[in-house]
Image (cartoon, rainbow, N blue to C red; front, side, top):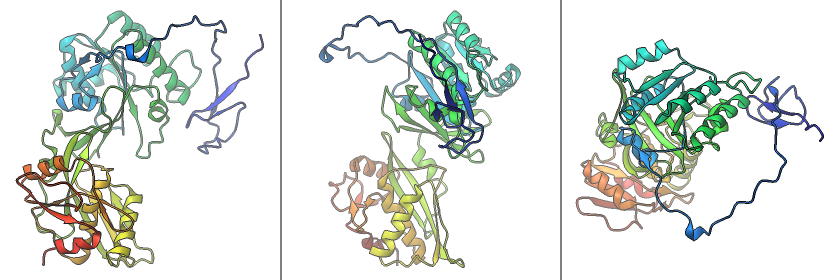
Length: 445
């Protein structure tokens, strides 16, 4: 039997090569290639497995365990599924460990929870747990970076939940690579995956990402795990958003809003009211959009600032919206609505630190920019939603009735929406918009 050829892998991006390279052709990293350890592969033929007709496949829902936090359960699709592996990714300091300590304390009422801390000492975790009021006898703390030891402990303890914080600081003794490298991260995740899939408990892996998502761990694990949760929010801002970007057991892109306080994270049960609490009524450049995050209608404030620019190339800055979509809307407004923006700086922000990636935000963005450019405020009782096309037309979006009901519940008397939308429910008037040029009629005179 011939010896298999060695394989080298970039520790930064995971690019593989049949020989060692000084510089990675994919990410440009220097001296980042390490040899992937050879694995014993059985070449014997596996026994045949009898397939079953798709019509005879089991349809029963997987049993779920509640986390004790309604918003988190909703994002997960109803709770934790036994034998599943979840990845909670976010920037350092955003509150991932805080959230999971609170979850561990609540889930421990149903059985032991194993909290594996490879990043912090047992004393550090205990101090945080006492501050949050999460000290429970059934929460078992294991300060251990070696994944083999953690898996062996989990097999002996038989917990109802395993939390590994974090996957990038753990290591496997089977792999001769530094912790945090792509090889180590995949090996650590694979062993936890094997633990969960062999009749074990659900496993939550914590992964750190930078603002540009370039850290190897989470991005290289997304295809291995069952659920990917993104925890986002500025460390100087109290609000945190939890969103499921991948979910094999429920809807993806579901969202929950949390507020960070001295006692930990608390769920915001009415996010629309909180996000609009400090809104200045009658200010030019402000528009309220009705968007859908997962299955939840949400009202957010869009603020725009248009001012003359002393620069040859005016600045275009957008926070909370896709920069490419922002540039597209500016071009449409200049071409189709006759608004001069070529010599002006344009700044846009979705208030509350919420990032929205939905076409229904287009109409509110366009209205806020026009309002700031004309120095005229939109009506205080007006909400907006609709997609803007390249020809300036306003296109219909899904779930219009739910958006209108949410706007009416928050006290908005009118809603600007695509003219082709269905009839509104009782309690709110609608203003049909066919093109962006019609937005000028909404500005107060």
